[in-house]
Amino acid sequence: MAKTLRWTDTHEIAIELDEAHPDVDIMSIRFTDLHRWVMELPTFKDDPNRSGEKILEAIQMAWLEERG
Image 1 (cartoon, rainbow, N blue to C red):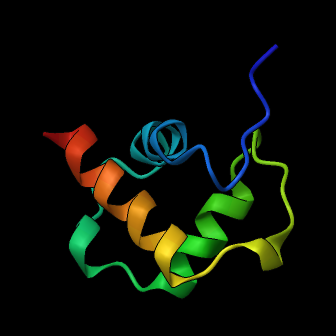
Image 2: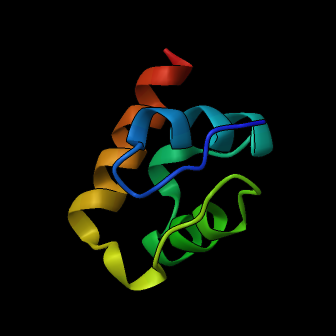
């Protein structure tokens, strides 16, 4: 069974986002879309209101790093 992800699991979220959205331009994503995509991940289970710009930016940077 896959690990349940929370907002603090930025690296793991980035990996799953990259698998789900391989062709997206990471730096052009609106945070509203990024938030929705994280919420749509099947392994993600956390309060939607616990994220903020700082967390979304950390996810975006981890995703960029994952793409290498």
